[in-house]
Length: 223
Length: 223
DNA sequence: CGCGCTTGTGTGACTAGATCACCGATAGGC
DNA sequence: GCCTATCGGTGATCTAGTCACACAAGCGCG
Image (cartoon, rainbow over all chains, first blue to last red; front, side, top):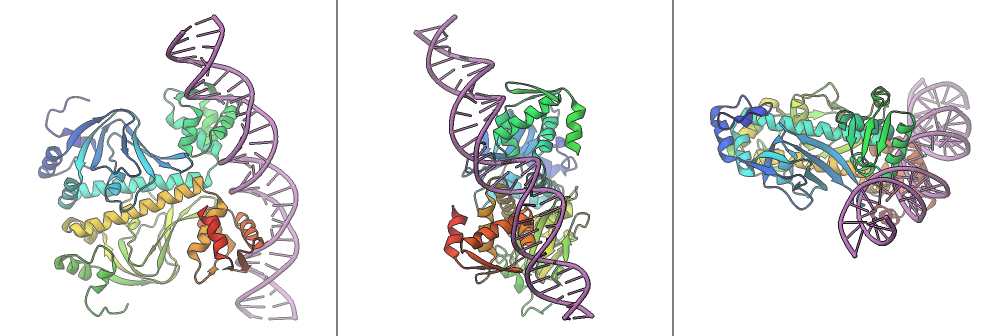
């Protein structure tokens, strides 16, 4: 991305914020703070609520639910151009969430303090719409997760996951990681992958999955 | 709808709204509309987004996720004193939700049009807090549902459900309804209940479950 | 190099839950 | 009292989660 010529140009990377009135843009740029979080940073977690609302400029944040037996499910990922609104929910949470947010890659973000956030919501329709739209999007994501877990077959979900997260036909992930993504046990993933392999859809080696037959996987994922 | 003794007194039934400035109270009372919805009314559904935000004065609204195969899971219930904020998410939703809200009993509510809602959010800190707190609460509920579905055993969840929803030791519900609540199949519920009965924890008859041994159920539900 | 350690993967046996195909029981309308 | 819709019970079968353990691949180190 080219170095911004004007102060606060990062704002325009957010869908819905480009039309902000100058006054609001000023508040946003002057009272937020750009920050860089190394990969693996825990942004929020049970008992650790964040002080700031993050608007992601680059990188991705993974939000996952933790079960007491050590198992996990990935709830959603926030990527550049999105906000981590759940954060606001956490900021206000009268109750601790059993979820945590982790920087999955290095992340750069604009951090907006709670009070400034409130101020912005009060003074700008566009910002309000931005915020509520973000909430709506997250809700939708959560609903999909629920639907998946409750109603969809593992093989289908796994095929989707692989197609989703593979880059150039290759997915770097251990069976255990995929299991955590889908909220299931490692063995289940191992067996499903063995079956995919048997059908010639993928090739496996320690920590990586290579897609051999995209169409085969896709056919399963759709149906 | 019963005429309130003093204009706007219903506002005080909502935790967090009682401290509103008079000016805001006036907007709320004058620009909202009290309404009565008969039991079974569909408040929102896929393809049917509501125009109003509802603040529930009495009755309960059940919000459930619909799976394409006809199965369901109950996401949460909103009761008197709560708002149906998801509604606002739906109002703004750029995407249809596969969820629906249904009046589970007769419901009375104050309906706030979308524009007035925006106005209130803009002009009152208390109202903003009220709204975000409501969002936060719903998120928490959704997280619990995800955790339950993904990690908890059916027998435990069923025992909890029975304890939760029984009134005076009796629960009026069919096996099919309980199955829908928990996002499972009717047969599973039937078999579990048969087991509970065998252990002397409950007695069953068509459409009703009677709790005989509260402690027994509770012990399972906790563990 | 061989050694031990950690992490990732494979497998069998078993339990829980979901699905399918039924059939019998019950209540309510007529 | 009979008909019919709804409710509940049951066996067979399949998918998924759990447990216990064994084997394999990488990795540091003497």
